[in-house]
Length: 94
Image (cartoon, rainbow, N blue to C red; front, top):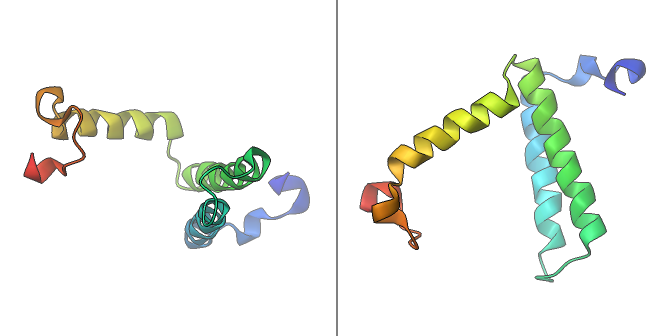
């Protein structure tokens, strides 16, 4: 879709990062006045967020699956089960 429409020229990393924030705001707007918003609207906005995330990772040469696994590995170290289970406390206050 991007290639056939020649939109790649507009996909500088900073533009994609801005687009992620804008679309995340639209996703949040779904929940602004309704804790149970229409699922189709949520799905549309979430798809936009994910699309821009994938486009940014591609532009930066990052593997989305790998960076998520790497981050999860860091989180496991910061939040040991024995200290973090059932708590929302930040890691440096556990």
